[in-house]
Image (tube, rainbow, N blue to C red; front, side):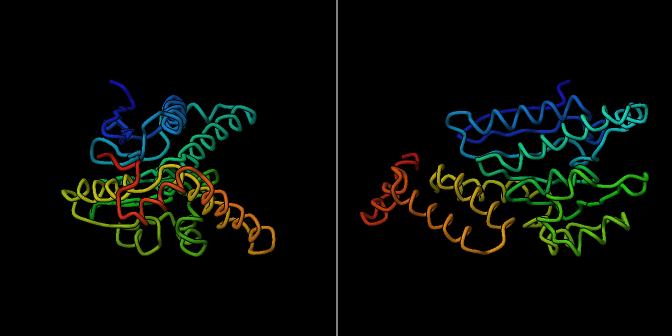
Length: 260
């Protein structure tokens, strides 16, 4: 059975973690597959959005136990290469120019929280649970920390990183880690509502918006940032997509990127 299921329909690339028997925990092989899958989704013609979901009861339990056993005998250099591969995977998800929707139906532990934090929009089932569990094992959530801190803020991340306590979907929403919490049977409804909104927007503009927010969130407000943001809007206004969007608005019609 494949550890990853990938389908494309109606402009949506769905990437599904498919290791339900292992709670969708990832090892080096799955990390490599996910990295490739998101890099492919970033450039695939016609893909307007990406959905990251999973099979079974858990969204992702983080690191696979068998993989962790192997890591115990790794050298410093091997551990560093392994950690860098995980970092590359998270960056491939976070930097994907297509909007990424995370659908969390169950538990997200350790690195699973990192996956959630890298998605642009996240809907979680009411029964989903979250945990930065690394310190229980004497390690730390190092590679995922930049994404987690950006998603839920430093105060909340500090609490959960040192306590390794389980927190529920409502708290995940309150902290900013997820955006909506609904009964499990309504996860698809929220996902489809977001997809409909995404398909109404300019594809290139959404990619540029993601780049804009990533940089604006990580850089102090100053002359350099103000100048760069002015350049960005000037470029979008002069772009073919920008011109078409403004013309369509003024002419009270749908822009060309909306099918039909």
